[in-house]
Length: 322
Image (cartoon, rainbow, N blue to C red; front, side, top):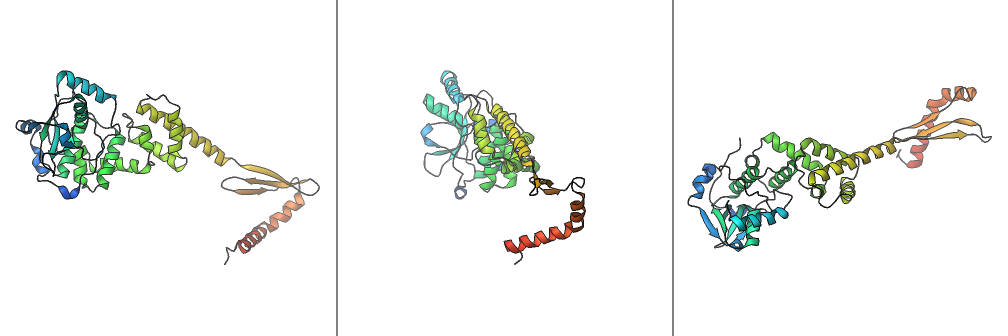
């Protein structure tokens, strides 16, 4: 079971994380994951400070696909009118008077637009604890989509975080983490960025889309499908359009692949000797005994030997027998 490292904060300010550099493993600060069991209410009593935004550096892994959108403008307007209601969380940097953000990237971006200082909880956390705080706060505020969690898991694993830390960060079981990772590994690079977070689209649907990658070029098909949509098309609708286009193309290509070509073989007088049928899987020679019964009986007696003779001739000519 994941460790809940703080109580759920108010939901009047939605949070979406921005991309930032992978936290350097050599720069771990004091603190432990186990020590984070204190509630946020207890922490904030003596930890909230007013900090200049330019003293805060972006940090941590990407856990959102939509990094900048119009909602930041809306959040900035809300803060301008009502003030910052929910603090962000930061940790001290190795540089004096500087901090590394743990969560609250969108709030920080909005306050930079409005101007003034930002209210921040300052905690001395190591990389594992910071990651768990980032993941849990983000889940409480606005649940990430399935594919956003999958990307976050992939980045955490590639950055060397241990399985128990990844599970705690997203509140998932080991099987849950595996389910997300299996799907993201099957999707070609760039496809998720084209579609976006696609809230409401789950593991089965993403898995079905990934299965088409064995038959068609998913990225190019997605580009064509999305290009035909209005610019403001929601991400989930983009997914449906891409899935439909990929499904149609896969069916069309499958029909084309299964199409066979049949030709009639004739002798010098123009009489039919038989038919030759070729498709993706077989080559078939058919002789109608009623049209040429004597030749049919002759070939039936010699068919196996003739086929072996042709095979040996091919092997000698192609050098496959050497």
